Image (cartoon, rainbow, N blue to C red; front, side):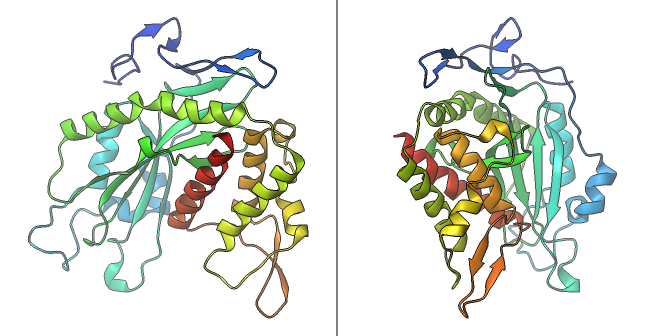
Length: 304
């Protein structure tokens, strides 16, 4: 049985989940951004498709290296339970196993989306809240949920960094469907906070110097911990818009185009030896999540 927004604790008003605030645009015109029920289907992955890219998801036993206190949590069962709650897998990844002995037990990521829950703005920006699950079967990682956003315009995943949306971890000491149901209900009930973060950013118009400053700050996050540096050309690169919707000086627009270009490696950097190289696209999902989270948090500072 598929759970609707109403079943998760919201009351319905027309086609909308009630209780999400409206935001004023920069021109003081009311721009409703609501969590609404959407009947249009989006692509989800079958178990076969998941297995093709992340076979560790379907491992049915833990690694022999775990302790006696470790309780195996089947990621496949979580997929089934999440589907009962209306959330299906839209993306799947796994880290590369370091040795043959670790194959099948390595860390993996599943991205869940619910077509009944979507944030629509009158400016045409459609964003799906998503739930990211990371797990492993080697005893080295907790069973962890993270809240995120997915923009249909550019198909980029944005990880929310609000303090209200801290990661939810479940230790490998036991798992029940009831626990999962409470956890997901709690995350869905906090969706208005997600909308509030978006609204704050949509309200802010940046000055020219602030645009450059933000782009530099986000590039700093990307190269942090390396010997690589970047110049003004890189700042120009990441500020280039890939589509009309991301043009302009608004904080939301500037952040989204810089975020997309940084994640996709659309800029050049200087190595320690002075050579110029094009950045690589971020493919490691842990780096992707951490980078997105930190960039979102930095951009949100401009909305305070």
